[in-house]
Structures are given as C-alpha cells and as structure tokens.
Image (cartoon, rainbow, N blue to C red; front, side, top):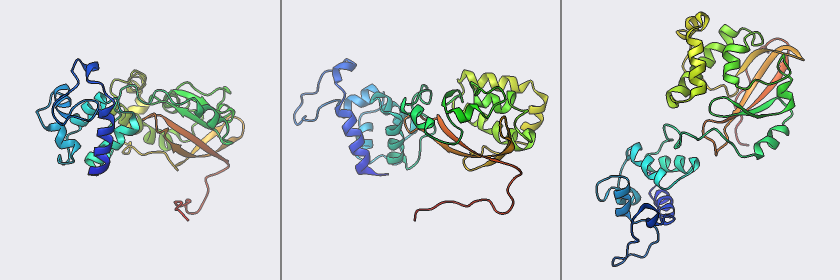
Length: 271
C-alpha cells in the first residue's frame, strides 16, 4: 500500500464533487474546511458503515475489497488509468477488470495518425477485436485487399486459408484469448456470437481441449500467407492505449520465407 499516493488520489477527487449533486448538503460543521464530499457522506453514498472511507483514505485499511474500491471509483468518476492507480495504491495489484463496461470501445483520434505513420502493417482494435483504424499495409495483407471488421472472427473463422498451420500455430493460442476476454466481459455480444459459432464447429471443439492457457501474442512469431508477398511469418508487437482498457495496438513485422532457424531474439533492456 502506498498511503501517501492513495490519500492524494482520493482527497483530490473527493474535493471535486459537490454534495448537492447527490442530494446532500454541504457540510458546515466545526473544523470543516475541505471542499467536496465529506468522508461520512461517501460512506452514505456507497452504503458502507461509518468510518469505512476514512480508514481507506488514511491508509489504515489493509487490502480493501475490490467492490469498495469500485464503488468509490465510480462515485468519483475516475478514468481507467486512475482506477488502475487506485488498485495499485490500495491493494498493490492491478484491478481484475475495467472500471466501466464501456471501456475499451473507443480510443483517442490521434491513434489513426499514429498507425498511419508506421511502416509495417498496423492496426488498433477495440475490446471486442473490432477494427478501429489501420494503415494501408494492413489492408494489403488480405486476399480481398480489405481488412476484416473483426480480427478475432477472422483469425478463428474467416481467415483460416491464409493462416498457415491454423490448427496448430493459431487456433490453440487464439481460442484462450477469446475465452479469457469473455470471462472478463461476459456481456460482450460480439465475442459471444463468435463463441456461439465456434461451439458448432467440430474442428474447434477438438482443438479447445488441446488449447493452452491464455498466451499474450506480444513478440510471438506465426506463419501466414501474405496476399501480396506470399508465404512468410509475422512477429506480433502488441501495446495498449492507456485510456482504453482492452483495446490494443498490433504491429505485424512480416518476413517472407521459412521460419528462421537458431535461437529466437531475446529481450531488450535499458542501456
């Protein structure tokens, strides 16, 4: 627990909230100087016993429950980065999921310019793997000359002809990603429809039991047939827009020919 950072984050956001917006009066008791909601009012608004919030803000609540932090974060209308900071300061760990159900479905418009400035195939998808923006190099990868609307569906259903060794090099690694996201976002209609389609596919049912635990594709190299450049391999570099939990930036480093021999490249470290 980082008591000083936690106190600063909570006090700052508490001071921004006018009690009257929640049907409460502004406290005027002796010694009351700070603007915003009082600690007691936060207990009222989050249906907690008196003194709960004061323990949290003062750093005297070891490992507070996630549901308490969630209620306070939503009351304070924290953004996703502040939500991550709150959980790290209070619990020493990242949150189990996004603060809002809508998180991850939109990114700042500047990402379109950023993606177009990348020389390799690159794109941004939302939390449902719907394509938000991509560069021309990414469009050129596909037989139709047009990137798919949803890259998860393409990898598991529509793009099997282009994904070399789909049953061994792609599906066993992508299926766990789908399942892990649905575990965190069970109400996601787009991904639920993809899962329903896969449930009727005998090829996928056979692969599901053989699938490994969810493996993030960052740095992974997989075989693919480029629509223009032919058979080769893509190394995937993955990042996440900080304002959109669940969205992802993918940069695909395409290399024609057979898989490289010898040891794979190692990790980069600070000089």
